[in-house]
Length: 132
Length: 435
Image (cartoon, rainbow over all chains, first blue to last red):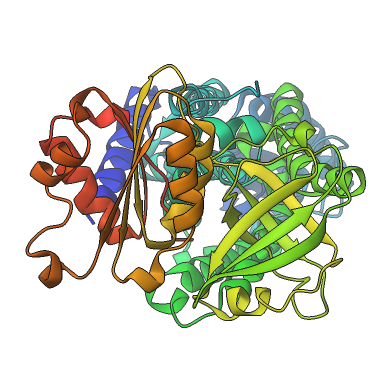
């Protein structure tokens, strides 16, 4: 029993030490990404739901003028690894361009970023549903 | 002389591997953000450690000869049992912190996040099944349940661990941030798993099969040694190539209709020759009772030799201390050792004393000494193996190497008495057979 307590304590202490030595980024404030007040008249921002992917959550915001999608903001994207960031940098501009030309969430996934694309489409669809 | 890997070397290697695993996490993680980041980070570390520790556990039980010889099957089994409990903790901690961490990050409830993980994340469902399998194996290994179960049932249920490891493997690469981003990490992780799998197949399947074909072991005869004790003689070819030493044991599998599916560890009770080996078994369970009726000619698979209970021949002065059926490996050592050798043989009745004629003959031929300490504690008037008695029976005891084999209770008291009599702990050697 004493050995078990020791093992658990040592593991937890080691975990906390390792985690606290890792650099910490400030928590992302989702709402502040695109304050609605600064939008030009006639445009409104609709925030999509957070969509989970294997690499982390994706959340988008669409800016709509009347029924036209004029802009897509990425509020949240997988950032846990360098590769996640690279994939995001590569995939999101393409996904956004596709969205603007298709004017819907029915777009092709970007190859090499299947999960990220899936999360993007899911969050985008929920935003469009919310706005409808 | 066979090579041996000692406890320190093995523990150092295991620790170095764990450090490499932590370095892998450190390297693959950019930064943590908020509570979700903390929890997910903890979950990743626990998961990586679990994925590593589970193959270490398999490695400990892979019957790798140099490790068995340097550390001893008994100690490996204890490490494995301790490590097993730890791994269950790691895996459970991993599952819980990952769910919680993802839930915090995604602003979802832990319940809906669990559902998301199970349905949306690749291979997480399989890994969850693996987790439950491991919990099941842990449950049947818990002392209370284990006692109600036959050794074989428990043993075969343990094979579900392999299934669990296989089921849990793919989710590490599909979902683990440390692996999705790095081909190098995936490569070395695969190398680790393949290496352990190869060692398991090599030492648990190939080597026994090869030895079976090479040595052609068969039961040569069965001899009743006492009312509850039988010796089994096993004949074979080129047995010297096995390099078995007195004090070591094999895992024996007798190929009869009733016994082929069980394998049991029994020590050699005589110095093996090139054609003949002997084991001696006390009737304690169904299996040992069945051995008395073995027919000559029965084929035998012997896996081994195992055990770190091997005399260190540099010390010329040796005490062998046997309790009950613990005499078997010491009987073999007694015949093999030269120098000043004293054997103390503790038994509760004269009926339980086996090999008396052999032991006396060896003692006479070698100029060695045998003391029989027989009777209950009351008959003998006090502790039969007190420090004073031990010093009297084995003069110069504090300079001797002591080899001790007996039931667990006797081992404990004897180690205490020997220490009190001035024998340094590192010169007291014993192996416990409780598994």
